[in-house]
Length: 279
Image 1 (cartoon, rainbow, N blue to C red):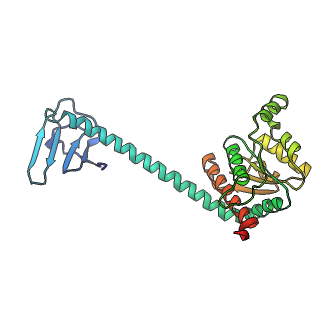
Image 2 (image 1 turned 30 degrees about the vertical axis):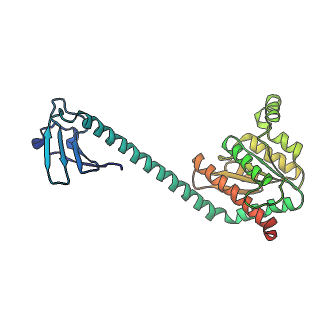
Image 3 (image 1 turned 90 degrees about the horizontal axis):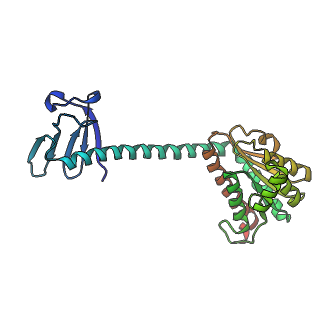
C-alpha cells in the first residue's frame, strides 16, 4: 500500500525544529504508524516520531537514536511517492491529450475518411494496388498498414496488394547514394506505380521533401494520393488528392497516434466493404 503524504504547517515551539518554509511532512503508513518529518533533517538532532497502536497506547519519542532506519526509510518513501504521483499525472495528461486530438480529428475528417476507404476499396476491387511511404515513425506506420492488408486485419480474407516503399534497404540506399534522399520514394513510385493505383503519403509536418516529390510523381502517372498529415498540413495538404489532417496539435507523438488509428480504421472498413457480406 502506498503511504499517504500530507504537508502541513509545523508547530516549531512544540517540535523544536527550524523548518524550511515552515512546513512539516506527515507520512501515514499502514498499521497505524504516523511520522512527522521535516523537508531536510535537522542538524542538531531532535526528530519527532509518534506511533499509534490499536491497543490505545501512544508513545512519543524525541531524538534519532531509536529510529535511524525509520528516519531514512520514511524520507525515501515520501520522495518516491511524490515521484509516483508526478508520473501518474503525466500519464493521465498524455492519454487525455491523445483522446482529445482523436476526437477533433474525427469531427473534422469523417467525410474525408469515408472517401479514403471508398478510394482504396475501389482500387483493390479493380485489381490495383496500394503504395505507402513516409519517414521515421511514418515509415513504420506505412509498413504496419501494408502488412495488415497483405496478411489480414481482423477477418479471414484473401491477401490484398499493398507495398510499403520504406522496406527495401538496397533500393533506398542506392537511390539515396546516386540521386539523394529526396528521390528515394519518387523513383520507386515511377518503377512500381500504375494508373489506378492509390498511394498513402504520410508526413506529420506535411513538409518532408521526399514525400512531396513522390506525391508529384504519383500525379504524373495517374496514381491517386491520400495525404496523411498533421498540424497545419504543410505543403502536403495542397498536394494530395485527398487530405486527412490531424489538426488538433503539432506534437508529433499525438499526430502519429492518430495516424495509426486512421490506418486501422481504413483496414477494417475496407475489409468490411470488400468481404463483409461473405462472412
